Length: 113
Length: 112
Image 1 (cartoon, rainbow over the protein chains, first blue to last red):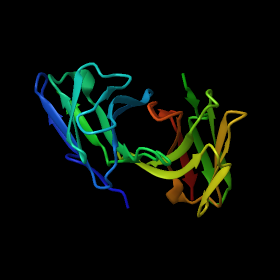
Image 2 (image 1 turned 90 degrees about the vertical axis):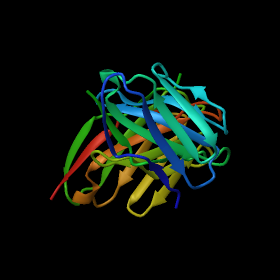
Image 3 (image 1 turned 90 degrees about the horizontal axis):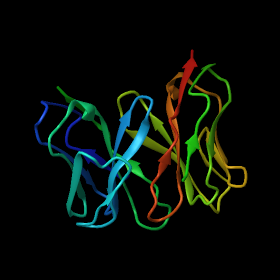
Image 4 (image 1 turned 180 degrees about the vertical axis):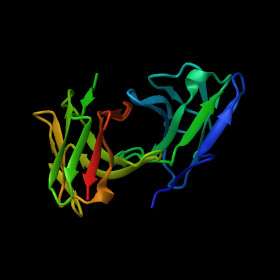
C-alpha cells in the first residue's frame, strides 16, 4: 500500500512564526502536491513538484514556499504565518505516467493565532 | 479551464438504499477521473480511478462510470450502510502538467 505521512496532525502557531509542514511518501513517486482545504472553497493546490528540486506554483502560492531535496520528502513552508493561513493542509503523491492516481496523507490541521 | 461540479452538496438516505452520486466536468479532454472518500477531519482516501479509455471501475459495493461525451461521472453505492457516511469528492485530471481539479464534494449521511 502507498503510504503518505505528514509530520503533524494538529499544529498551533503564532502570527509571524515560520512554519514547516513535512510530507513523506514511500512509493518512489515522482509527483508530490500540497493542497489546502477550507469550508466552502474545497481543495486548492498550493504547489506541486514533479522531480527533486523542481517545483511549480499552483492556484494559491502566495505566502508559501516549498522544498524538495529528496524524492520522498516534500516540505511546505509558511515564511511568516498569518491567521488567514489557518486551514487543513493535505499532501499527496502520484507516479509520473500510468494512471497518475493521487494518494493523500492524513492532513495537518494548522491553527494560526 | 476544467471545472468540476457535484450536486447536491448533501444527501441523507436510509440504510440499505442504492444510491448514485453525480459529478460533472466541463473539459472532455479528461485523462482520468478519481473518486475519493473523506471522513471528518481526515485526509482523502482514493476509492476508484477511471482512465479515459475506460467506461467504469468496480470495487466491492462501489461502481464508478465515466462518460466523457456528456461530461459526467457517477459513483454508485449499493446497499448503503451507516459506515458509508462521509464526504465523497470527485476530481478530474487533464494531462501530465495539469492539476487535479476537485469538486466540492457531497456529504452523505446514511441513517440506520
